[in-house]
Amino acid sequence: MSHKHEQLIHSIFRDPISANIHWREVESLLHHLGAETESLSGARLRVKLHGHEDVLHRPHHGNTLDRSGVKILREFLARARVTPSLFEAMKEKAKQGSTG
Image 1 (cartoon, rainbow, N blue to C red):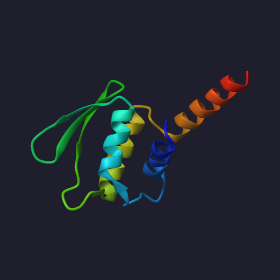
Image 2: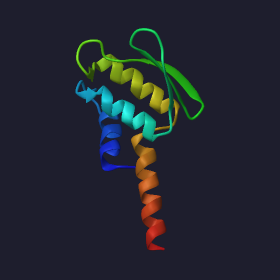
Image 3: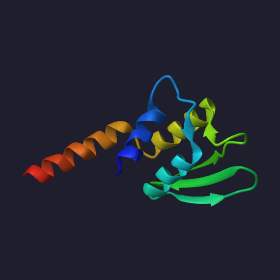
Image 4: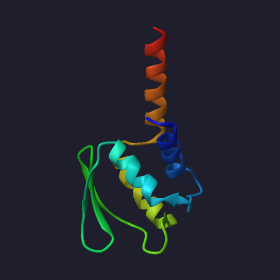
């Protein structure tokens, strides 16, 4: 996982909730994670990831998610088992594998 995607995961799960997360970066992260996406009517986007499905809403005014959008994204990623602690564990495992 790239450093950029890792930082984005941390930003999504950071408290207080950020209001400076760009939609393009979210789409890039979802595709990197292997999510299937389908555009629906309006600004809706169906996302399937690790057996979980949800409908996310693209920002209407501007290109950044508001706090409620980040909260919905955070909840979806948590259900799909995509969390900062998971990436820390993966990084530690890779580090141990490369030294052993």
